[in-house]
Amino acid sequence: MTSLKARLILAFSLITLIPLATAMVILTARIQSMVRSQAEDRLGAALDGIAGQAAEDGRHIAAKIEILARDPQLKRLYLLRPSGSRDLSEYLAERQVLLGLDLLTVADSSGRVVAMGPAPAGAAASSPAPPAEVAFNTPAIARASGIGALAMMARSAILYQGAAAGAVQGGLLFDAAALERLGKTSGVEWILRDAQGRVAATTFPDPKLPDGAPRLPGIGRAEIAGQTYATRSVPLAVGAPPYATITGLASTASADRAIASVRLWSALLALLGLAIAIPLAIVWSAQISRPVERLAAFSEKVARGNWEEPLKLHSVRELETLVEALDRMRLDLKAYREKLVVSERQAAWSQMARKVAHEVKNPLTPIAISIEDLKRSFDQKRPDFPEILNQAVRTIGEEVETLRRLLQEFSDFARIPAPRIAPCRVSQLLGDLEALYGREVAAGRLVVTLPGPELMVRADSGQMRQALINLIKNGLEALNGDGRVTVTAQAHEGALVIAVADSGSGLSEEQRANLFVPGFTTKAHGSGLGLTIVERIVSDHAGTIAVEAGTGGGTTFRIRIPLTGAAS
Image 1 (tube, rainbow, N blue to C red):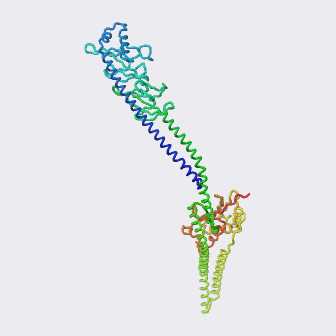
Image 2 (image 1 turned 90 degrees about the vertical axis):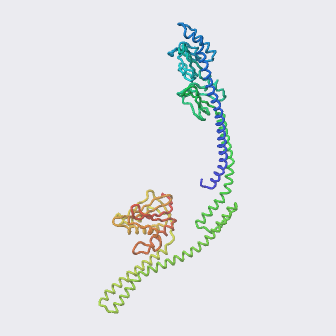
Image 3 (image 1 turned 30 degrees about the vertical axis):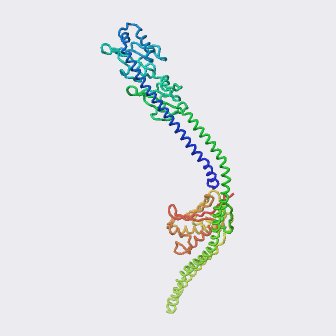
């Protein structure tokens, strides 16, 4: 994704996709918000209605049971019941039907059931255990023992001579049928739980609804049996706490289908938009990228120093302005290069002249002193004149030799020929160094490590050998005691890297910065041209040379030149 064309295609694609994605997100959020609001209103109204209806039913049941407990006939049948008589049970069955109750029992003062109305459908054939006792004259929702369902219960005392002789207890089952009767809102399902949180009744068709079904106090979202619902729970505040809980669930399947449809159509529109946008992007990006590619190629030519060919381009106005600016830059660089060549040539000659004058002046001083001392001794006719003459001759000879060597170095630097490039085996190049420095290799002061696979470079083997000799010579002169110089060669990222490392005392930052400056040297005697010659040879081979501080002290020179490949 680094090319301009790829980025333009990506930009056109994003311009197509982002509005669709934004519209889909906004529309989906609006639908969800609308469904949430409608579900909350519907559930709120339904739950308020069912809670109010339950409270109203509780009051009615309590009133019915209280009236029945004061019924004289019930008292007479209860107090005067003969052994084995069914009159009380038949009377309770009659009253249970007339009062519209599902459960109706009479218990003595100890709480033992003495008579009861017919059991509701689904109860055991034998007399079931009574529902859990509730407080007198107060309705409550409790689990009816032996039936496995919650019931809206009320209890009232049967009084005889001002004391409670027994109790009448009755109520309505709170099962799925009751839930459907109480909550008549279409599209809402109900879950009833007892005070312990266990599911007591539900309008869901699946009777195995888990106890962990949702019971959120606020509006929420739940998934049951693969269907999604908006859900809310409220307590049925009938009697004393803890209360049973009713949960309403409104299906959001229609909203989910609408959201899925929106997403599907958005995806199809996105694909259609991409099918149109990508070809257009390819055409338009080509019209923009081709001139830019030509500009890049022209800039690369300028960077390589090819400043002769002008550039002409017909494109958008902004690119034509850029082309004109680049062409002016090319002409300016061409003129500047010509001036720079002249200036550098003059500066080089000036620097060379100063260096030669400085280096020549050093030997001339002892020569002049020796001649002056020789003349003074001759004029004084000193008896030791022969010894003074011999000393003067030796001094003058040594300094003349220094001058000759110095001039030879400058002559060699000025006459470095262009390299004769040819295939060169790296192992052969390093092998020549081992043979040349055989004594140093045998003494362990020089270690030459040949590369694993045979490597080939296109180079002037003589010049490269001379460059490595200069580096090895400097390294050996920098050794202290039992140090060593190490020469290694390896391939790295398409280049041959030759490292010459010594374990000497190393160089300071300032010395490393000036090593390749002509005339700079760290030795007491030297022209300072050795590393300059090395740098020039490496540069003529399209390579680079760098100096680094060694890991354990010393100095490391690294030469990088383009690698041809492995030798066959």
